[in-house]
Image (cartoon, rainbow, N blue to C red; front, top):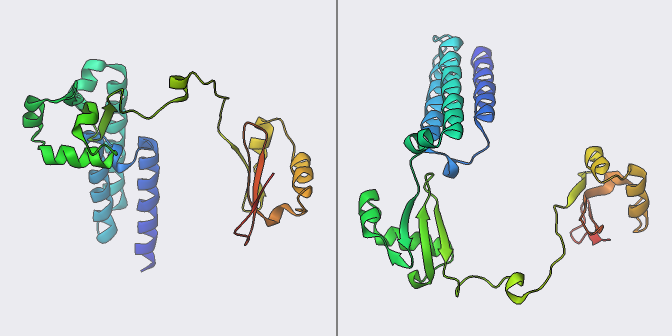
Length: 230
């Protein structure tokens, strides 16, 4: 039993490392060749995991070979547009200039009901509002609405907006992120001083704290649903 546990943990770690090296994409974002590799890796790991008579290397070596092949193909497709077209395919335009492209729908065996379903999922229930609909190589549908139907932007009203960057996380579950503090040229002492203004003396009681680009500090205490804002 102990042997099975050890083998399972080793294979699990091997698969995690391999998938980590292969990239950070979600299943829905994988290219066809990447999905095939992911499925094959899972199958190769399952065989020696179930049968203790099979050496671990019989499962790990093919997994490493698949990883090397996937990384090589990804590199080639990144450097060569022609190779990328062969390996990943090309996006297909299903709606162009507000009109359905019948030839593309037939070629992809993509019926209109499927297209309408995907458009509804993108919050475009009316086909008449769509200027372009493009089926990407990973199977995702990109929608470009007609200019009259797009959401109003500040630029349309000639309104100048302030810069909005990413808020910087400073505390998670009572632990201070010193690296992020250094990035914004602040110290832990500054953080303690700011939180003390709101009666927070112990950083370990802080569940979450972040600083936005406007210099506003947001915090929430542990076991306190309301939290607070500085």
